[in-house]
Amino acid sequence: MAKTKPAISAIGVLTNGGDCPGLNAVIRAVSKTAIMQYGLTVFGIEDGYLGLIQNRMRLLDTADVSNILTQGGTIIGTSNTANPFGFQLTVNGKDSIVDVSDMAIRNLKKRGIDALVCIGGDGSQSIASKLAKKGLRIIGVPKTIDNDLFGTDRTFGFDTAVFIATEAIDRVHTTASSHHRVMIVEVMGRNAGWIALHAGTASGADVILIPEIPYDLKTVCKYILRRSRYGKRFSIVVVSEGARPRGGKQISHYDKNDPNFPMRLGGIGQQLAADISQKTQLECRAIILGHVQRGGTPTPFDRALATRFGYEAVRLLMNGCTGCMVALRGDKISSVSLESVAGKQKTIRSSNHLMAAAKAVGTSFGV
Ligand code: F6P
Image (cartoon, rainbow, N blue to C red; front, side, top):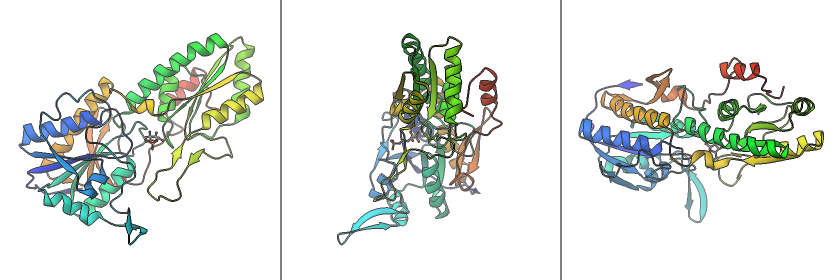
């Protein structure tokens, strides 16, 4: 990460990728710190990288970012398909993928924007890294409910998603118990099982299935049947959307016609319900929590983390830092180079302490 004291008078801020509780809290912290501490002008770039490419930006003053700390979503919008290094354009009636990154950077320069704060997940930070290599002053802020961003212990939004999922699983618990059913709750997380592990352990799930450990269906069924033999007439299975059976595949949906269309995972809960009910003859129901996990107000932890991240992003920029992402290490805020983060995912290791604790209290991971 480069360090030369820049002359910065205006910055842009954008939110890119799937939304996440705490985005507005970061926008507020970035804008208020920039305006009130450093006397900067702030532009909100609309709909993430899409607005950067299409030159859609608006001034944000303190009134614009007032009263948004607790609000879910993002006041400046987001996009999870636009990529300045591979943008789909129709030229002479033909669809082509074009590198429009120079134009995107020019759009900033034309408005006098000297630096950019990019709030996003791994795809967004990879794009930020490439923009930084082109000379744009840029700082990343790690966002995602999945907590799978490399280089930081935590992303903001994760705590809220875990809270929502835990509350939902608690509710499922009571109805499972009344009807003596096996309830399968599918949570988000892409290729990382962080939400399943944390919410599953917090709600006392009997089985937790994560992408990092392909499960054995027989083991899962044996475990559930053993519970019912001991008089436990219901079971709760928390499954991550990216989980798959041993030797099997993840359930995914992909649009081959759009190279920027992200792969979507989902549906393993339904499949598991069918498989478990067929093998155990027990009544099963599947629930997909889906985007509920991303909506609504952030938890106090996420509000505070988002505020720390936003403040730090501006502080780093003003200290001459560029090409880096703010990060949480333990309880300390630090930073890592965007290059070291790009293209990597943080998944659960077999030595994870929470997983060991969950196993110690009898939770099955399906193996
Ligand atoms: O990365 C966040 C996330 O919510 C994932 O957990 C999930 O797989 C994906 O986004 C869903 O994205 P979309 O908004 O495209 O449905």
